[in-house]
Image (cartoon, rainbow, N blue to C red; front, side, top):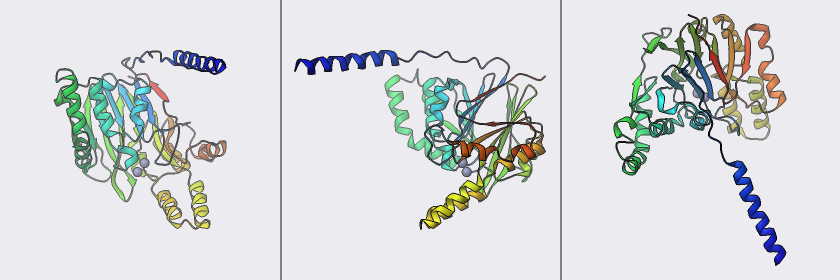
Length: 333
Ligand SMILES: [Zn+2]
Ligand SMILES: [Zn+2]
């Protein structure tokens, strides 16, 4: 009995010590307002299960502008743990409405409001964005009521809780549309090729002579190459096609026709690493960053497959993206 008690006390002490050791330190927020164009990868995964990668999300920070391109599931946590300035969130840009690009829209709107966002949040995207925003607004309506009641209108003004859908229309399939141009940050949208999901957009960001382009989901796209011309960073989705073909054959052999067909279907509307590199070469992009990586590069074999043949078609720098990875681009002019 005495031993038992002793063990229990030791265990409790151990717990307390572990807890004390695990006490979070308050991280210092990085200084993003330094004249540079910042990019932080807040989600480099895909719809496939992945313990380390959130679904699609790329954050762009330039002065007071803080924009996220896509907000897939788990991505808002990556925004938070990377100390991005949630209260300054000035726009969400959706590339298309597959669930792995919109799953955290409710969290992005609510959490940025809770962090102190004072203006309504514009959510841009292809036509159809109205439906997505209306749905999330409805799903979070009770949560919004609770918070206003609990913390008061002064702390959490209801007017700022709202998200406003801003559909972007293109004049033609190869034209770019201006999304906004303010505080020195110019954002344009253009069509990529994610058929039958249409239109699906990529986005181009220009700030103090620097250019960052985010592909969204796309098969190899000439229009993307055109609109990515001269990019410092081209952030491009990738899917290792032979691995997906291999998985499809395995499913087929195992009698799982459903998974076999789905694996084959998704090959058609994504780009291989070499195709992404070909686009980067035509665009003369300085650095190519892989994101939305299918399958997750969690083995050395997949890592190798990701870069195989890439150097033959593209001579720039190639980076395999990870969640939390950050790029700082000093002004060029
Ligand atoms: Zn998609
Ligand atoms: Zn996707």
